[in-house]
Image 1 (spheres, rainbow, N blue to C red):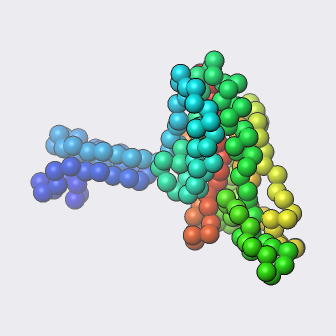
Image 2: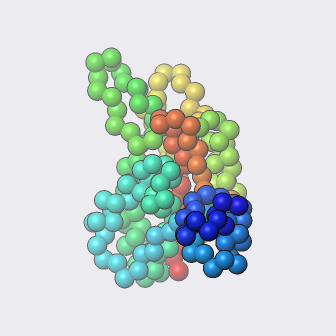
Length: 202
């Protein structure tokens, strides 16, 4: 394996868990330095926080790149005493997110709409994401926000089966698909992955 070569002084790996485990196993007996960034969902911790205006401005940016970027964290762990303040900052910011077709205008001369997201890769992926939300709710998660589609943001008669609206879940079950899997669904620059945000009050 290349990572065991004496010419390699340090291994930095970004990828899946299985391959990451193989890399770690391959270099363990060599004492070689290695950094592994493996699939999963990163988390923001909200502790002893008071700058809610700044957080409100940052929250929509967390959806940028549709989880194609490691800093677009999809999950929050919130200090229990701050939970009410967190919701007051978080939910209004999430409600500003706009999903639709980038060419949906009433007249040809109208400016293009300002949107945050288009479709995921296909209708099958959208169904998978909806099923994950349904599974989490069946197992006790509480939906705090479910985005609703706006007809004005789509073309007349458009098939919208590949669109997924933002969803916020409170206390999603551990070790379920919605809390343990990365949700990459990109095929072209105009396709995004899911925009689900999960968080727990400790």
